[in-house]
Length: 256
Image (tube, rainbow, N blue to C red; front, top):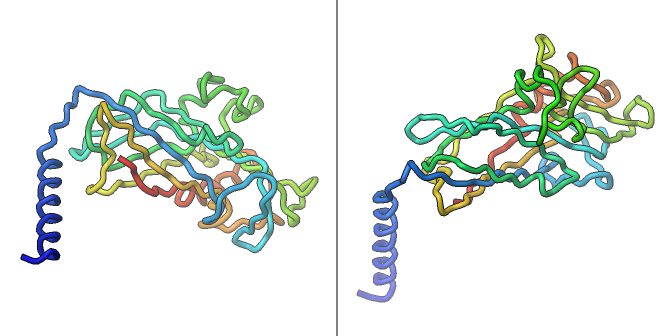
């Protein structure tokens, strides 16, 4: 056997051994573990930079961004056997001005292999009706309407030369829980069955999502800032929510 054949044989043996180890792994379901949700903000494929970077929307209008915040809540994980684990009190606020907010450790997750994640974009109806909260839902974080007694699910602010608002401003505060202006949307995605989210007591896997702020203004209805540059709930916020429900989050990969 020459050196090439010997190398191929070694690789094959190691592959079989590795596969066997995976098949033989016994998961202690009594254990609990931690994983990290990472969100990477972008605008249509390029990094999101506040204040100093100009972007172009789907109708060719220039704009920049001064504020970009959004809630993710009620996170649910689905195991390979189809059972679902709802993470208690999972309310997370991401703020582009605070990079540390984009990395979130979620603890006390039952051990197992998970192949799907789902979450609410925004805050559920019950918490909206419960009034001001604490933690990520603290009104001091600038995501609560005192005049409307409800949470802003996604906040986007900036400027555009095409905006007809004062100071060329862009103000998109998306929220509302009552039909026909309900803007609560749910996102879900499957993970690869070959590389599920493996929760173990001695691991801290990381799930990476790309978040495209540009999705607010394209999709079901492309938005021209000359025509729509301000919304705080109502029918225009529904237009924006219907756009981003399919484009705001994109699952990228898992590091187990």
